[in-house]
Length: 398
Image (cartoon, rainbow, N blue to C red; front, side, top):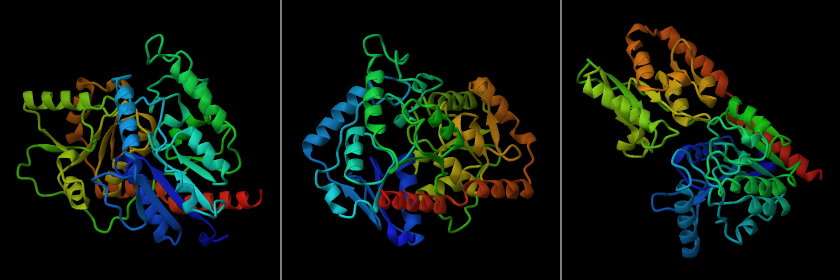
């Protein structure tokens, strides 16, 4: 079977963020490889669709309902994204755009307030093969985007420790309802884990443990030219890049970063913080960010396989990051600096930063890191295509 025997429709709530950028890059690379692939995301004023990209228009009522639900759910937890409910925003006639449903694979990325399991199940019943990429843990829990060490998702999210008594039964109800839809999706359904850590978590989960789950790393944007660090006006400090767009996020370690920056400023330590969200959010702006940093620093308390670490490694920029989730498998012990979970505090992080000057990275260290990273990520497009082809064959043989 050739690439002409299937088409792929990528669905993502947003066009930015980890899931949005990963799905758009995958879409672009699939088209470059000769596959028929399109990307759809909810229409926004800042979303200008590129080649093979489309926006999904929503009604005023749908926008209002989505905003209201987001506002309510954002109050349920101050630490993590928690979205037990999701509004379906797919227009009624959307499926009719693709008359050959057995040939059209719906690849779902971030789906909050874009889809819900009821709609995903309906699309499956119409004949579409379905693929879901686990950009976070939402698909395997009763609402948490990251479990933060809780293992209740391995059973059925009963007695959720995140919520107060009275509300803590909601995740269990959501999990059981989701299970009733997921269990009906079998041979034409597959799940992708972008990290080996996520693969392991998914295989333990109540919702996904009996499903087809495979590891395929996120697809990288092709680097057209080498990005070299810009010239420092003051060589007495080290520039630490913070790529999280939400600098207040507890999961992303926003509080740790702020405490660290205050400590460095108060004690005149030789570190300066450079924030990606202060740069224009286009190719030129992102390129300028990478030129202005010496290290990328990621102090997340929970992570899958951050695109920003992939980008840094592709550019040969060393990473200082917490040994959490899928980050651990991305770090190179001879090139990067890992921070154990117990050391995720100002004192522990400063100890790691103060040791930077003792680390002498050579060109050989960099080359070996790049080779190791290449082996980790190589084949992503081919593996996606192989999965699509397999699903297409299995669908036609039913």
